[in-house]
Image 1 (cartoon, rainbow, N blue to C red):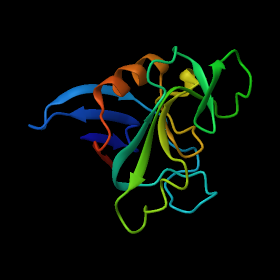
Image 2 (image 1 turned 90 degrees about the vertical axis):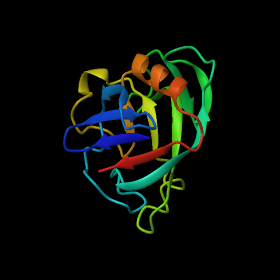
Image 3 (image 1 turned 180 degrees about the horizontal axis):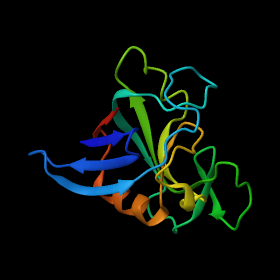
Image 4 (image 1 turned 120 degrees about the vertical axis):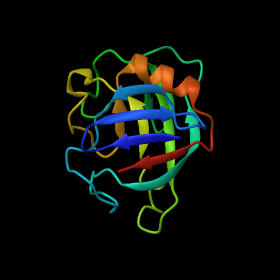
Length: 146
């Protein structure tokens, strides 16, 4: 299970016995918590990882429409989606639109902002940490964002 703390801007991957096997700082939405499409907010609640995108791609691969476009070289730096994508599906009534909102865990061009709210709704990680998390997380992994 993955636990994300919005207050602490941290992520922990827990094993079946509740022990932390991986942790990393993250960046959630600059606009705070929310559930509405177009709000650029991070939803809270219960989720699962529904899709894993980018396996085998080089670090810093840029994705547009969840398709690799090559290694990122500074273009489109508003909210570059880099390295890997773990696409979330909401399990609660209020976050049921999460998949349609394209809310992911993903690598970022703005690694200097990790540890503070700065994303457009997704949960950003440093690219090397995104690689590590991706390798540890299968489809169906439970996620709690609080």
